[in-house]
Length: 545
Image (cartoon, rainbow, N blue to C red; front, side):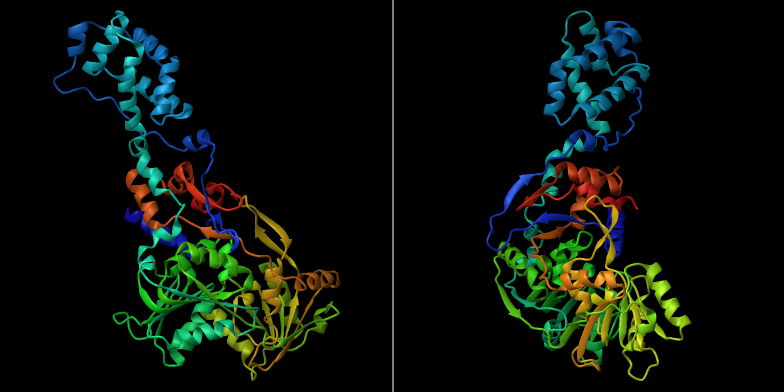
């Protein structure tokens, strides 16, 4: 079981794999409970039978033969074949959790077992002999067949337990410690550069204890550094490292962590959950849902787009909690330019060129460097320390580095002194509902988040602008920025480590991928409001990595 806990923690750190549930809008708070329909024959095919070798009974070898006579292999095969084709047997199999696939697999194993036995078990030998003599019924073999089926498919003995474990219809009940508290929830809603996260962090630093849950290691590191600089001892916890403000033996009362690493067993006075709109993310949304439902804090500050207000209010309602909403306006002016820059000759100090692939980052930064420009580079694959050093180099007014080339990571609230955001492209690789990568135009939310990083309050650039590199992209960008983000109606959901461990306990011979992708899907119940998105197996394909 410890094996699965370790693997589950590693997968959490990879920040991949989630399910999704439809969540109700604020005006539709009734949740519809429905059993998820699945292709049971496909799911059953993933249950692997455990080999059972015939073993002679001690002191009983040949007793059946002595009592009732010899049974030839050909006679035994006839009995078994008749047994397999009987309609009553198929009905009995169905009543005991054996579909057509499992029945066939169990029969093939049972047949092989009987034929390979030097002597059949005494009771089975006597029964077969009686059937051959017309003194018994063919269906009398079923108890022996079922006993063998349960040996090779142990899940048949714990079907009710497995169904109960995989019930995902009430996620709030997974966190009894949080449900035992009276939590105050404050939603700070606003666009980028509106001061919403600043207000929440001020409360975090003033509290006796607190946890900050951020979307990026770099952002968690920045909060960790700022808190300690201001005299609030704060530890750092990410999937890769843990740093202590004091010492390992004396953990601080404040913690800055990536959202996947949020503790749901530690009480805090204040919790800050940043970029709450990411709970809709197909890959990581489950971590925001878990943090919101499970964090043990007297006061929870969630920060993000107003598009998430109704969803958070509905989720809070399932916990018998209310949401207090604070709205914010942008603090600095943002202008959309009328012309694309068209050439690298037109870049200016304070420009951030945003790329959506590592190849583009490499090509753009190399081109600028060949023109004699010093460039800072930030992308997801860099170590946190390197990212922080690159950000500090770009932010330093005394530095000769005046240009930044970055991915959309800058849209996650990083403190960067950007004067103008330039979209090198508007096409981004995304993961579709089938788990396949495809190229698509960035969303309204992404465009607003990234563009809003220009002209940050209290920096050397109090006004910001945004444009594109290619002229043909500019009308598309203007259209995206003229819209409001679509209301969020779905949140990510993922089985807990405890649920996976219980599955492992009941099915000790199953692999992790078989547990999460196949077994769990076979029994899963889920809460719906509008539609079931995709199969749990498709959402959890990461288990095969």
